[in-house]
Amino acid sequence: MRCYNCGAELSEVSFCTNCKSDVTLYKKIIYMSNRLYNEGLEKARVRDLSGAIKCLRQSLKLNNENIDARNLLGLIYFEIGETAQALGEWVISSNYREAENMASEYIGMIQENQAEFDVLKRSAKDFNGALEMSKQGNKDLAMIRLKKLTSANSRYVKAFQLLALLYMDASQFDKAERELSHALSIDKTNTTSLRLMQKIQNNAENTESDRKSIFGKDDEPVRFVRDNELIIQPAGVHEPRSGSLGTIFNIAIGLILGLAVMYFLVLPARITAVREQTRSDIEELQTNLDRRNADYDALQQELNEVNAERIRLEESLNEYTGEAGTLADIDKLLDAANLYLSGGDMAVVGESLWEIYNALDTEKMSDSCKSLYNSLLSAVSPYLADVTYGYANGSYTSGDFEKSAVLFEKAYFYNRENTDAIYFAAVSYQNAGDTVKATDLYKYIVDTYPGTYIEAMSSQALDQLNGVSG
Image (cartoon, rainbow, N blue to C red; front, side, top):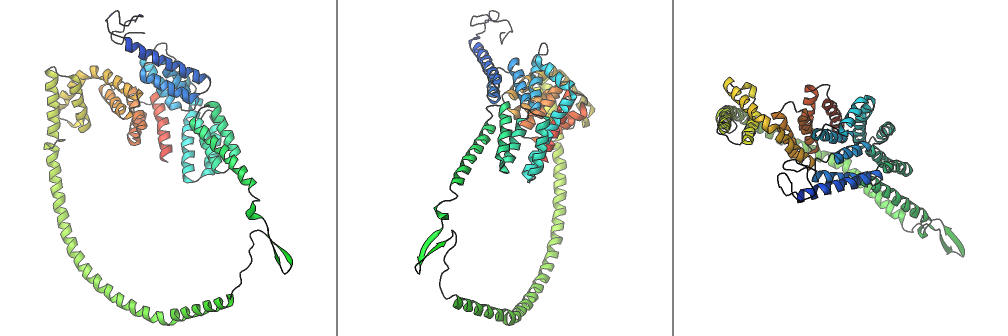
């Protein structure tokens, strides 16, 4: 274990013998992270994969540089069919330590076995397609696709769960139980699988109870005596009631005939008169309305032209003098240059350059402004690139994906050679629910870095997003 402050090897004492920093709490955090890793390893050995994932996530929250915990978490994700998440954990692990790290070997093994990688890539797309079919009501087609998927990829827990759910919807509970048993053989404590299995067992108990009550008292035949004879009446058959049905029938016929006379003789003449009066009133109102509409349209046209001209002039003025106008952005650039020359905080200078980059097309700047902008960016980037990337990794590990997405984008802005930064920016946007921004970044990676492993993972992510959106 090394000191967090100077990197020296720590001894058994509660302080660093090199820099004298107090490492008591630091040691407790590292020990707790390792303890959670060991618990996760024990759970993984008995196939309690859901419990192992929780332990390993807690371990990484305490120490995000715990390489063993991160590599094991990636293996568990790979075991349950979540290939993209597994690769993500291994890439982060290899960034922390390149030498003597099994994560690099795992990534290499997946890249070398292109046939298996294609199957895994197709699996995510087929699962999303089956899920969309289920939502649209095409449940038979969804079952067929899921059967092929589970046959090709026997570790995809989510596919087995969805197939079981479709079997339950079709009342094929034996088949649903078989699929859930397979899912539980992979992950014994998966909450979704256990909940669906409990529903199947409850349904079996209710079915048995209903079967026993088929011949209840309500369905027994009725027995009674009439004229010294025993009458046995079947269940559901009732004695007809006595009454003057003929009288009621005759009254109904009379009412029907009266209504028919009114409908065919009286109403037509009255309806015709009302229609003529209504038509005359409508024509008069329509004439007045057309005249007023013509006047209104002329005035509205003039008003629209005046408003359009006013808006155009205001926008032209704001482009130069507004808070987000050209002059305001030039002022920001000059302020950033002045701050840098006066020895100010480089982080503030970098933030100003980042805001200018997002607000303006820097390629359309004047030559002098562009030269000043590029000079400032070259000066602060070596310092800010690694620092920003470290903050981004910390936010990503803690689950704050909205913050990590922006930080990864900034890290890539400061160092265009750090391709992992732009990839994890896209992953963070996807985890944060901003699929539009994630899709744009994945497409940018595919177009900009062909033939790389991040291009392959970005293509897979695009397939998943396209499958979800239909």
